[in-house]
Length: 526
Figure (cartoon, rainbow, N blue to C red):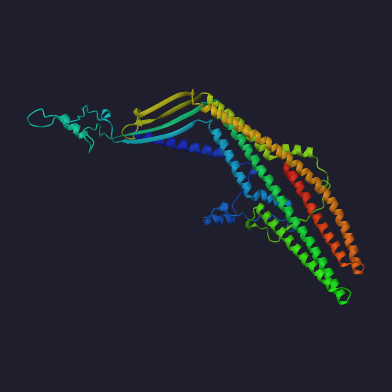
């Protein structure tokens, strides 16, 4: 193997090693730029359904996730806690927020890459087919004529200069076109290194801005989780309300059927009128209508809940039941302190932290724009080969260079000033958005506190009304059976009892929803 071939082989090997080393370095950095564990909701391994989708050529990300096996407890009950946990794993909105967080982390890595020197391997080969006669590489020293010369003797022969000039003219060209057919090749192979040493600290400002945007993306994902928790809790409570209304409608229907049978016996004994029987038949029909309406409310809420949980088919597992409404605790019935919850909101609301991080990012963008007034200093170095004929490089073809460059823009037509003004305006916009969000959060907290107090008072009054209406209904029922009360009076007391019971269920759900809104407004988990 000749010395030239060995040098060329060594150059290519070094280039490949450099490219491979850069790729390995980027992969190493990527490991340290991974998503934090608390934000990673992707499954550790693909499921069998996803594997089959890969095999069939389908896109796995469009497939609905499987129903988790641990969604229900041992009694087949879907608790609110498990519903929220499943929603945080399977809701597509949170997966989209995770992707935005990964993109923000990638932008941090891009900003950090500006601190490193840029190493590049370049190779260029060119083929020149036509050059001006003044750059004739044959260097024949002949002058290209523009017209045919007159023979110097009587033999009518052209002189040698004229003949060679005609041979050098391009094919199918006129005599006035000057140029030269002298094809040649040029090859250049080089390694180059450039390193930006100083740019007015713009790199530092851009890195800090990207880090603040990463923090904003984390806060945005936490805020998305907060809204998902609130929505899941609301859907769960609406389904519980449907269950409560189902229970009331079923009890009303049972009461109507019981009275219908009793009235039919009285009619057979000629102690009641046919209209009395028709009245209780109407009551049973109305109770059945209320039962169907309550079932529709319950089923609709379950579909919404399944959607929020990211379950396939928009339905809960077969046989799933919701937890029954528990008795209100002393904490739920205690009056909330608005000052405490306002302080919690200012400290914990993710959307406030998101806007604060965005404002800090805009501060750094202002500094980066101001850095345009500073000079830029960079170092450059290169080593390579240049050859005009073929790619068999030798020592004589080697070229090495090093330099330092300082660039300082003196006049840009006002571009730098406008960039600074733009960055300042965006910073003021971010500050105004943060101030507006603070006002909105305070309003949400105070409204939620008012709703909690109102729901607590409604529960107290409605519980008393239910007890009183049940006592009155039972007394009138006993009087009706004894023939001392009218049918109209019995219908009235039953209607009052059903209305009071329904209002009590509604007020209990309102209390839980008010606490849900208050915790969500303060950024606290439910």
